[in-house]
Image (cartoon, rainbow, N blue to C red; front, side, top):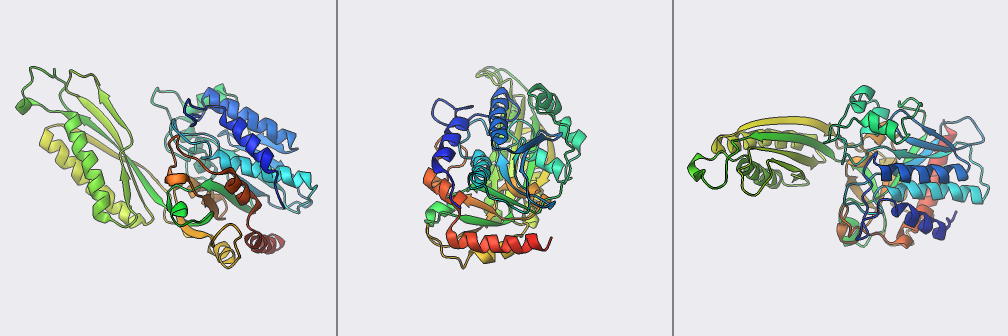
Length: 413
């Protein structure tokens, strides 16, 4: 089955205009007015495609195309929210390719035994409300609904209040639901597909992630009269911790990565010694044991940095996700031998966080596509439309093998 590539490109352009930045990127953070406008457009398109649209208690949007039999649905999807400096293909590629697949089924008046649908997940990025993947986490039974509702952004606004404000506090229970399979097309979170000249990857595992927050309390003083020997500078201690995080990742080596992506200073003015600094730490590795090592090493780094500068430190390891899951190997085995008209065979990969909770809903491989330069977040994030369209079509041999495997699973249900 071929899709309408021009229609997909038009949809990408139209949705990409909502929250578009001056330099061509995307700023459509979860539960903002732009997020609402993007959701409204998607819901309109879903209804025009004849889908039955519902919204659950976490604002997840479901669109379902009826099957000929009362069987569990096959779902596709992703997220439509972005980070403040995101790219236009992050998340919305999977959402719009799912929609285009359903539109193309309609074009051919195709009938399926199982219902086929799409999902748009809420706040997957976690840029505004932490943790990331909070809505799929509630749906998978990993995060209590009330805890998610009471999550606040940095301005103290509750998630549930913003869901209600933008009109997406749905009535459908946000709980695990019958699902025969779930498939997600997503950009690759890295440069490997491009480096190897491959157009397609198949995820066989989910990286484990640990988030920590650190608050350092020093002594706020004037920059001029305070001697260096009497300073208790919270930012100096924070700088040591930032360097220490990189050192931890290099010491563990392998696939371990460590990032300090957020730093908040008080009073944050040029002529005052910072009296308070808070920072985030993000460690990722396919192996849970390596995360345990990294967090123990971080405890030591924070203790030493605080003692040397004479400041007080608060450290909280507040979220763990992923977990090195290895699923979907049967699907991967069917994909690998297939001839691939777009290049060489699909690459095996352990992917970033986004699929973590979705694996608990229904295991099915995610299929990442490459980015130029491996850029995932910034405005330089680009993907070629012909490649995106090719992935919705799916390579012929890959598609046949996958369809046969899926039919066998469906017929046994």
